[in-house]
Length: 168
Image (tube, rainbow, N blue to C red; front, top):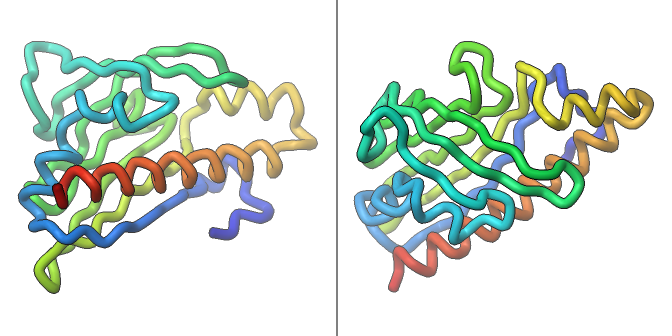
């Protein structure tokens, strides 16, 4: 992926894809299980549904606890903004109308399997990354580039593990 010159205000997006030899319903069960994600992520430490929710549905909220060597530890509240079994699962971090980030999975059936895409878009609301940019505005493009590279690396790992689990 190419992100040269990307600025936070441009809401840059990273996306990765993985072919999985399993039907979309099987893959959906994995990507929509928020409790599985901390096992697959180095940054996401734990998650829990809020307000008595027991699973994914538009409007449901969940608490995420994260940790990153350069950014420290933080908690977020995410809102499910798209949930269509077995095609899409998307959540916005913070205010769903003005999120600090939006993450999603898109599933496409074909040829006896599933093309799974995971994507993450920064902003438009300020985030922890925004604070780093404020401290070093001359390095904004490098900061954004590095974070998008981290997103891509993490998504590649997550997708590979989802493939392994779905195909086993």
